[in-house]
Image (cartoon, rainbow over all chains, first blue to last red; front, side):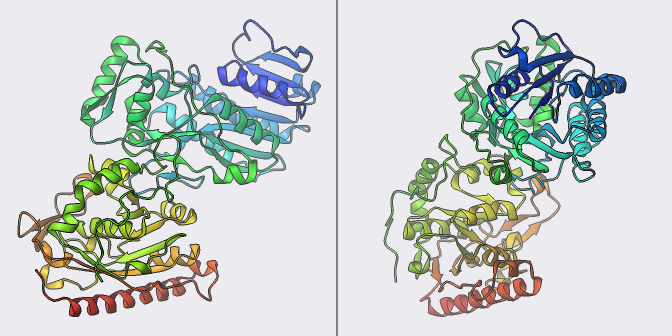
Length: 319
Length: 266
């Protein structure tokens, strides 16, 4: 298996590249990112190549797939590019989240050597409503609200775009919906939320939250790459606990506040302190919770969460 | 037959599936449940002087469904049933709540810690698949706040419990609760106040429930799945027939229980 990994410069992307290079089943890893790789190439340089390119341009995607990817015999693609900064919006962000996915999907579908495409999606695409189960399986409704923030709409669009192609051609496609990975630099809203010494929680609500470690995310994604199964798979994390416990576990102060006051307070905080957490993105989750049902991933991919999350240290609030 | 006081003071944790932090995935927290039972036990024993009969019919292990009638201004009958069945069997009873409950501040969190689960197929299916004991009131919210003249008349009878019993091959134990439908007479319902998705607000005649003695009569378990395969759960006719069988069994049990009681207050 020779793998192309997009979004390879993120902490998760780097961890996946390291994991793949450590596996004997993987021949070559072609990492793709928009930034410089930075200091320190993976130790197995002969099996690793880094390409810096912008996947929002059709020409670049074509040249990548028919240039380096073909040269290295790439047969599997892991697409994990999602714009992380929640404050950014507009056409450019949409292009990174959705257009890049579409172009890569189409390109891979026409490529003679690529047989497997895996999209890393997230649990945030699921709609949370009081009349829906706490246990979110793969058939759970998605967020299709026009008023939802672009950060969320883009993620749902990229997910649905990929799902629509699952049965369309000979290429085997899988969508992996990961629980929230509680780590820095990955775009985790909870990480930003817990970065503050005082965490405001809706008064009267203490929902169950499922969080995932980077190790489990890497293991789940690697299982998704290795398996040939098509379809959508939920990858839950190891830790499921109430929000108040999560806050306490991270050594933060839990302050219950009447729900309607939280949004303006966090908005004010974002304006003054550059805080990245957005309450409107998390409002439903902070009231209703929701835990991914990983039964399908366990049965088909053999994935089982095993690694507990390491509580975030006292990192800076603005990440 | 009268149930003795707490036969299983320690709520059994063998039904508890810890997700690693002392809670299950639905939010059940056994220490909170134990504390609530310890503090609220007097309501069952002293105030309502609950008597139960036939609790030995409840399976001691494996999936099972308790199906009961519903009444009263608030679901006190549900609390009494869970407490009584839990004490008698040592199992944690998972009451199934209506779908508006998760939107209620404070109550949603407290209920979750006590083991209440919202009644969706995915949630209830998961509980039965891992062999838990659940309690369902097929009359739903319509059963709550029945007018006094309609007491012990079963309202709209939902069939989800029968479908789940067939699919997960779980025995159904009918439970007749006598006393709850008279203890807190309801004058009417306010349907315009739809805060937090609550379908109505009951207007009780008295500020507190009357101290009527409550009786819980457990019927023999009904194996709805006998002679049927799990696919029968997809057959609307088979499900309706199974649900009607449970309803009839409960109606008969309820009639016998009302005839057997000595009086409302004694």
